Length: 369
Image 1 (cartoon, helix red, strand yellow):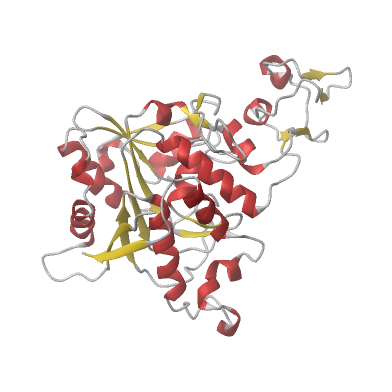
Image 2: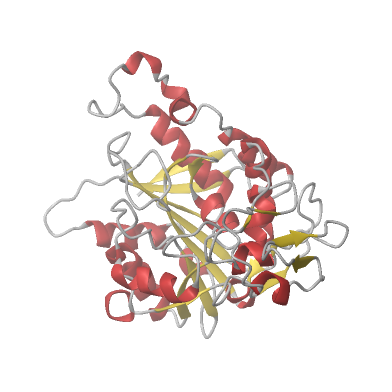
């Protein structure tokens, strides 16, 4: 496989140059203008951050990219999909409010926000892909599926299930509908948490397969001979009555994320940016963030999301660990920062599998801008 090019810019600035200008110079040097954006619906995929978390990407960086895309004639919109867990981003009403609170609004970023999988996370397209071992037809948020071009802007960080979160996590997990997230996380059908079920019948009324009934005791029951594991009940239940039965391993999760990413990008021009700043140990989905594990390291861009993730991981693994985070640095081997943070994860499995299914290359040439 051909070696991919990853473009890198450090965070040093001389008078007359700031980080926003450096980001613009970086993405232009990486070749974003090779894409014909004129009149094309362009989805800028990012994580808006759970309110209370302060490590997410600042809107200023996103605005810089949006302004460039708009100048190239793109019909630009910012997007993310609703979360599987209950929080302030599990439906479009609260998700939009959270995005606005964190600064992602038309005034700040010159683009509208569209929640990809609709009001309750049930608006998606099943996109078949070749060579899939786990998810032959990933369930992608409809707005992303309808977009002509995909541009991802990722906050590179640790992740408690995947090991780290970068371009693949942002795209594969972040563009999945609620049903898609269920498929990503679980190898089995949902179950009913009887203690939380109040018998509201929302799951019964909305199950397309007639698999759920609410009995005289006002508790839902799933008929697994009819259940197809679509996740509709999990998406619609507001009381955590319908939940995941069990979680997949980190290795399988990362492989599924690669397949979902392949579906997101299928047949579409795409470009990817990662900011290796505020490298928090866990995801921006939490309503808090811990101290960064390593110093702010730079910005990267590439047409290859696999090479981009590999380059970011290499950069972090070579960096010194911040003194205030770990009391005993001897336990944190540089080549395994993410493994140290989350011992039960296997971040490399996803990149290996992504390369295997033709999503990109782990080999790259690093070009400093």
